[in-house]
Image (tube, rainbow over all chains, first blue to last red; front, side, top):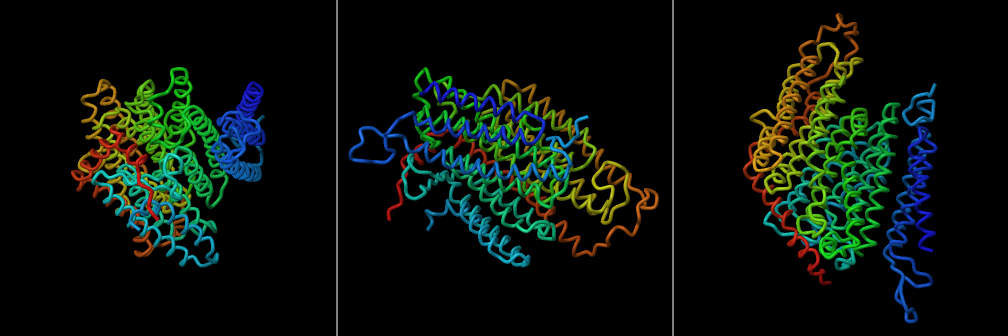
Length: 109
Length: 514
């Protein structure tokens, strides 16, 4: 399980880094989204992997999951969601104003 | 009531922003009055806070009465109060300039302005690393919209770069926060400072990574070399008001560097003590050189001022990078000076550019501008301020930094770079000023329609220059009361270099009894 999650985070980050270095806005936005997915997963498992354990106090539970990373990741998701929406609109605006979707606004020959 | 004072600088701009959103769209005078009144209250609160903490007290405020380290805390110490007062003063001057009419370019200027202040004040006051991230996002989201305020092709392009690089920065911030929480089990900065001392040997490397990731993020916000490339375009293409307000934005990065690397990764952090000592000073000196070279090579005044902002960050972080009491104190004196001077120069540039019609702010011989004498004098004084010539506050700031460097092992480097870059700053500003003022010609010679320029009556000129003069007065105030202010900044540096008291005040605080 740890290995699987680690690989997923690694792949997501690698894709995110590669895509956000591209020259057109759409791959860059996708890359930023991948990066935020990776970091959200990363934050979530920083409370360690626990299966079937409640995050709040209960009489029957033997052990607990760490609730704080869940709260953190919720905040991070909301923020990255808002940011993604903003950057999509901004890219569209840039496309309409500059007439192409290059990040630097210049046509490739 | 008094115990709640710490939260007011955060909650007041937020409430004002919400109220402004509810006001009908066309009532500009009402919006302006609301926004301005709120800023006046914020100044009053910041002054009160400054006086309260100036005797060395540290006020900690537990939100929702959750005692630290479990809840989120706001902490007001000398440094936070100092940053708050600088922020609200710059913001007030910027707003004074905006309410002449540029705020009408977009419907929600005043709301965004207040939310920007909400983010800035929160970032300075928070005592929690994740909360710092949240306030960074708030101030960034407001700044994205402010940057694009008014629209335009160049703004969109610069804005796109600014947004993308900051989103990558936010991701790195979260990775660093995640690592720190995973290994130390806390995000409260005071608690982190305690826990980091007893880090097991096998975790040291990972926390080292987290610490350097945080440094990368703060360096990006502060526009430290090599992460400064977003700044010149973004600052040069936005409106003057926003650029003036953004003069404080880079200082948020500098503040975070100072806070995190004296408190968490400071001298007492065991294996991780003085984590960025070997990085900060060389990078800051290089930033200073690059900023001044950029200012020399600029073809427009706005671009030049933007590069001078980078140079001022280089100087500021050189002072912080010495990591001595005298160095930090000198830096904290230089910080308000450089913020006020850069903001004033951005506003004055706008006044000049408006008067030159199609020539805008390009360094080309243009028409003789209206009120040439008054604006020329103001430009001259500001140039002296920024280059650091006596007798104004820029000189005192640089003098204090050089004095602090005398006992430092990198003395030749610091002395050489700061003195030579000051000379080049002077050359750059002299070149710009002589092009704009001395080589100006009558309109018919440079093929400009003499009637194109609107005639300005003395009232509108007064309105236009009030904020520039206010900022200048603040710099002169820094010069006149340099003794008192230096005492305060020295005490602040002392407080920062002895984080035990901060940690104690936060962790042993009494939760307010109901």
